Length: 157
Image (tube, rainbow, N blue to C red; front, side, top):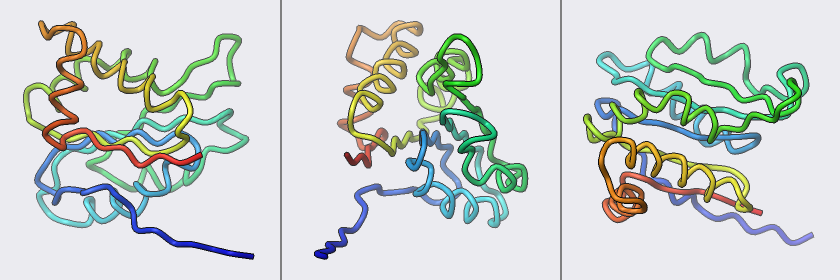
């Protein structure tokens, strides 16, 4: 069996910068230690985690750990627990004011990790829509965040 290890590509900031992490499914793994580290440092800025999975009882990874992180707020999307599927991009739009405050007003950063299929595009579109709601032309808020390194992706198939 051939195994190849590669270093991650995310350039995570120190604890004083507000961050949004989007990690559906196993995409939450890169954020577990980072958010724990941030919460152990005095003066850590707010962190928001958007986590999604099929069901709360089925695969809510690290469920018992998230409540131990006082400066991290976790929003969940359980796609199979209700009649209507709910994904992380829906939760981003539901909490658009908080997303805007962090990314649009506080110069915070956002990180997306997980499947490289539709999720990154859909999450990016939701973040861009938040910018459009605050006067940005379609596509320009997302482009600015990506160009300045304030929106980063770590995706895999």
